[in-house]
Amino acid sequence: MKQILRIITLLLILPAYAASPQDPPIEPALSLNVQELNPGWWSVIESLQGNQRISFINNIRDYLEQEYDALDNPEVIQNRKVIDSILDRLSRPNNATDSQIELPTPKDQYSIREWLELHRKNSHLTNEISFLRDEQKRVDNIATDLRSTISESLIEYRAAPTGSQEKLVIASQAIRYQLELLLKRSEVANLRQTISTLQKNEQKVSDLLEYAEENLTPTPKQLAILEKKISTIKSKIEKNNLSAYQKKIDELSTKPDNDKLAKKIRNRIRSLEDYANAIDLNSQLIVTQLELSIELGLSGQPMQLPHPVESAWEALGSQILRLNSQFTELLSLLRNADDIESETSFTKTWSRLGKGRQFNYRISLRSAEIQYLLASYKKIALQQRSWWNPEKFFPSRLILLLTDSLGDAWEYPLFSVNQSPVTPASISWFLLIFLLGLVLSYLLRRGLSRLAEKRTNVSESALFTIGKIFHYIIISIALILGFSALGIDFSNLAIIAGALGVGIGFGLQSIFNNFISGLILLFERPLKVGDLVELESGVRGRIKAINVRSTQISTWDNIDILVPNSEFISGRVTNYTYTNDLRRLHIPFGVAYGSDKEKVKSAVIEAALNQPLT
Image 1 (cartoon, rainbow, N blue to C red):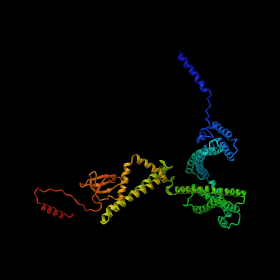
Image 2: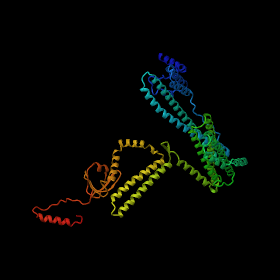
Image 3: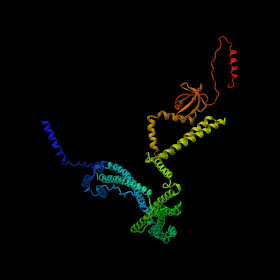
């Protein structure tokens, strides 16, 4: 009965205990000590969040204020200002983008305008991801430099006398670098999170863009609007002559340097802005013409291939390259300028160049849009032509479905090597290259073998050695090219060599030993094909082939024996035909006791002379 009462009491107490507020998590102790600086004291900040993190950072501030308030040193004061700024930034909440964009619900039909809007959004996301990746690399490089700087500061810190002012100054510097590294690591983590989110958004937009392209529908009202827009752009282009701006830029580029540098740069930037504006107008015209052509094609009118604007776009492409090089040249000139008359003039010039480069960026987006429109125009035009139109002919629809499925499977990533996806296509390329290498090697060796049969004055063993060497070279080149097709980076050969060394040390000693021994036999040529040899084991016969792992010997009984190559290098080998083919043979025979020795001698000599090989 008492046990039952205890159980009931325990059941009544547990819910109340569970409902009671729990103790707050214990804040980690601050291990920062300027007299005995711990290299990893700052790493605990990364694991803290919210109020705990803010409280810990405040403890760092209080400790540094207590240690350095009495120290009036300019370097310490500067370091503390930087440290306070870093601590303020570390106290702020994570500013990484983690929001998924909201896309419109997929519709049964899309106008060209809606479709292009999706493409622009996709291009914007792609460019933003590319920019953030570059930024991540930049911050990563800064973090790498900071690690090196921290190591140097800690070495100086340990060498400084204990309790000295010099040690305190170096400690403030090391703490500053440690907190800067923490900030950069935090920035990299935020960038990774933002890039991951943007990639998900980009995939969503890309999927919807593909769906919209498959469901494009004509909008008759847009025809008049697009035609009017083309007319307006053409009138603007007449007022902004591209060749005239190009000529003016050439004059400014070759003009003698009589003006001040800032003024000269500003004049060139102004001309480049006009030049970029003219290029942008021509790009707008091509985009609008392509929109109109696709609109007409969707309405059932025939679509010309190639599109007439393609030649104009090729010509404009060279102008865009010229514009980019001009802006790059000015950027380099301004960065290296040391004779600009004033800081204000320098700032204005730099600001003007930044505005000019915005034109350049806008043109690059327009260029991507033109490329996309041209590809889509060709696709729609091909679908419109004759029997291949999937809407008109069922077999073409079936073939298109099969080719799309096979194309997706052909480029499907199976796994990654060095962050490069390996697809069935890359594996097929690897096998094809390797197979071509094998075929080429076989044909070469076969040709050498036929040469040995026709030319009796050519050494068969020399041709065999040449064939083997070329075989190894061809196979090695085929493997390198094949692995490059798979995406393996051969700049990391040290890692591959290390892995091979470990493999050889553990389980491939015998195979590697035989392989190297085979190479020695081929290059040093203590043995060659056709030699008559005898091993320590008693095996005797002629060498037929020297392979990667073993050598093939044919005995007197016409039996082929495979002997590991290492036996020829580490053991004793008798080569009866090493220098020439003439040898003395000992042939034992017997005669009856009491025979005349002179008669026996003359009979043996006569028998030997009767043999053609003696």
